[in-house]
Amino acid sequence: MTIPVWFLMLPGVMTLDVTGPAETLKLAKDAFSLHYIGPDDTVLTSTDMVISRIKPLPDSLPEGGLLVIPGMHDSNTGFNTSQAITARNWLMRLQPAIHARKINLVCVCSGSLLAARAGLMQGVQCTTHHEVITRLKAAEPAAIVRENRIFVEDRGIWTSAGITAGIDLSLHLINRLCGAQTALQVAREMVVYFRRSGDDPQLSPWLRWRNHLHPAIHRAQDLLTQQPEQTWSLESLAAQVHVSARHLTRLFQQHVGISVRDYHEQLRLVIAQQHLQQGKSYEQSALAAGFSSARQLRRALERQAKI
Image 1: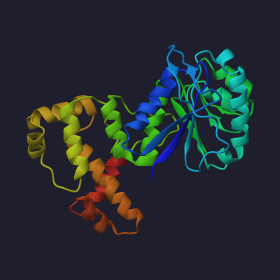
Image 2: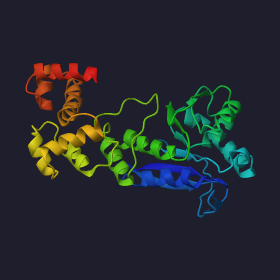
Image 3: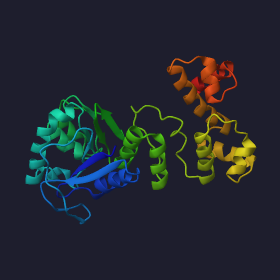
Image 4: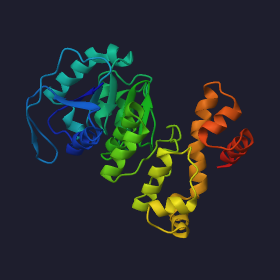
């Protein structure tokens, strides 16, 4: 099902706060449909770009969608305009649906200020650009403001730091809503890294150790993630990515920080743990993940605990 995304457009909006997340979400195949709404049908952005054909603010938004509030070029004055006040009052009417998690709220950079002024940040863990932190605390003293974070999520309300953090957050939304493989494909298409906030759960092996740009390693990792249960010899894997086994070993250590064997083992452990959570025995889980025995699986789990 396509997820609708609504961008709240105001005069003076930061261009990349809109286009960064929009381009990122657009690359996730047909998972998202993008809509632009606001008090005016045309706005002038921070880069003097004119965005037109903006739809009026709707009375309500459908459940399950994302509402994105981008930041402003000058957040000291941009959220005091008549259009911003209209948007604030509109957000206040959406407050019950947002707090009931029927609508996911996404604030990029100083967009969290407008959300705070609309009463949406009471008791909510949140963040914003480092230069806006003090004003966010003043706008909503009851907010739990986290500093030095790329982004923070609390009960369906996502907030992010500076301009490019909107792209980081969009990648993680794709990961959450569409799956790791789609998020990874988008990240590689955009040639950007996956980054985590301090409170974000550790990335799964499908995303972890992919913060590099080496094509041969990515090809090897793609092969391993497609068939982690298969027995891969170092030589056969290296041959398929057109490098020598010795060179592939060197590349993994240099760019990934772990060996090919350890990376493969981490993938298998995820599969084994999924089977264990489903109530299967250690022997069944081990064989399903490509381990030779329950004993080998237990040893791998012990090694994982040390990483």
